[in-house]
Image 1 (cartoon, rainbow, N blue to C red):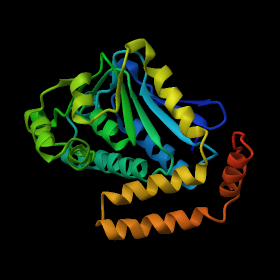
Image 2: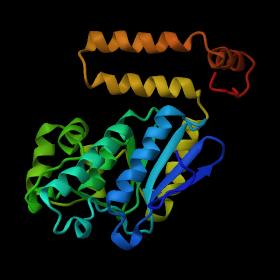
Image 3: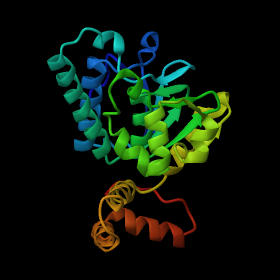
Length: 264
């Protein structure tokens, strides 16, 4: 992970919390090739070295758009080969995001269309401002979701609702996003980041190794049957037993104090 990126703003808050902002407000925070490269580097770097980060908040610059999806101005007049090469970059970035062991919360401050909505449902969970709007509009452009939208959206809202959203391309409001399971909370517009950061800090107060293992186990739960998923859970659980954090957590409970987790 680099210290700075051309299309992303990184802000380390407290010791363990990272806020990542899509930073192309002049282009609706849309994803161009450079943002694809930046995201790939970011998520890959955090897979290798978590840098003592325990939670990530992902949001968009400004107060109108979270992420408008692929940059159609950049894509205009691309050859088939150029389009597919760019999309291959986006695919690698999406997979790297999915593999990131650190919990990622989407703070949806505005419109999340196309790849923007796909990003929301790739995050571990999401909060949205009341002004936020959502849509997967690819079907109206002669294509289809290609950023795990047909995979993650059905897992979030169910297959039948996902078919309605994808096949109509119809936008929906934050309240519907909450009702359907796209987001966990709907916040007043001016309270969104405050509420997201409060939740993120609660995560950051917990043992980092336990956070990473629990996230990994829950991700596996959607991929395998119950018995094999449980076997993975126990394997992840047993890796935490010999850690210093486990000893500290139990000791702090008995001493009636807050634990000081070290990630060891």
